[in-house]
Image (tube, rainbow, N blue to C red; front, top):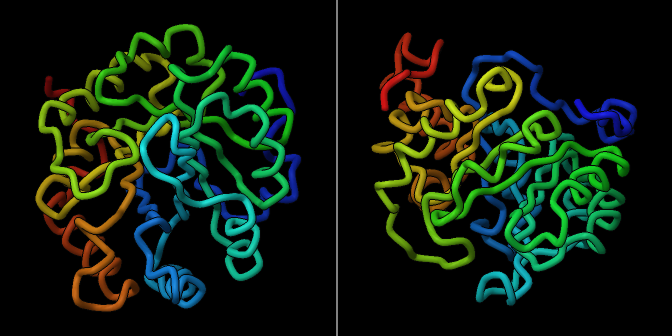
Length: 256
């Protein structure tokens, strides 16, 4: 933790944030993929299905060519869910939005360092609002950007697709990058969670975990639009993941 206010001091800490050191793979359904006409019902089904946290993609139409979820929807979701919320801000200069998402009930905000005027100050501002801080690495962003903030972040998201664009195929070269990030974390690797975002599926999910991922952001390749309701799809994905991993889930691989 940094010198800023601890997230545990916030009322949002009542949402069950995963314990440090927990080995269980955490599943984070991406709400942008939900049926927006049934979003409340789907959030309840995801809770029943064992979701560990909910992931909200926020895109401003500038950093990526899309417009998506805002703090008002997050606030509405908080009224019906006790899960931890992560807001992934794919926006240029996210500073003005941080307080609004804190007030809406978010536990963790993830930003892209390449569009922050000063990523260190952004992280400090996130913490002053009582939230945890994450950094997302686009496919072209090197893990070296983490060097001066390793002791201040709680999560690193490895993007395995280009941010903000739907219907993409997974970029296979990004899977080894998960291991690169874990090695880059060094002594912080046990504390800082590695998440993977983009075409996480039954086929590639186990390898992502072996490389060091502890949070899988679940979209249309794993949970949504799978033919069953999202509760059953999420349960089936976790069951399949744990079966494929077996005892391997206890410790990330050291493979390169």
